Length: 219
Image 1 (tube, rainbow, N blue to C red):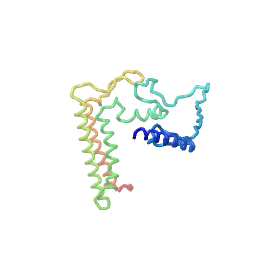
Image 2 (image 1 turned 180 degrees about the horizontal axis):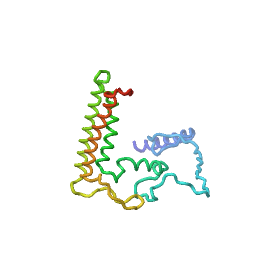
Image 3 (image 1 turned 45 degrees about the vertical axis):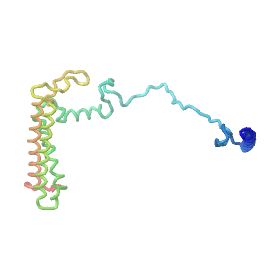
């Protein structure tokens, strides 16, 4: 039986091979394997694009500050502008020569004065006769919450009696006195000044709007 099956299998294989070659099909190894088409290969051309090299030196607009990449800061036309540097150096957070108490009062006055308007115009009682009083009380409550957050941050970040953690060198290497705001005592003064200034700003805004009855839009 095996001897008779062998010539039959070989004859079947030869006939199948001739038929597939005529149809441009490749024959896999084994009779039971699927056949696949054979197509002429196409040559794919490739090319490389290179940037043109010029002899003129390029000017770097953004570069590491002072040429030192390990500082972790970039020097841009905006951050290195004398006008921007003057503006930032006059903010209360960067005026290290001023007492932290006075800096807190300044920041609190600005925040308290500006918080009244949004609460008056967007508060839940904005369409009632109590919009001014409710908005002012809400602004004062937010000042109290912010003061508590500042207190919690100071307790968790600074320890009593430890020196300031602020750097004593500028980016150019010049020595300076460490900022006393980065101490437990300095932060406590800043928090107290912020609370006093914030409540004072809210009171001043309410006085201007509803006691002097000035024609402001936020009324």
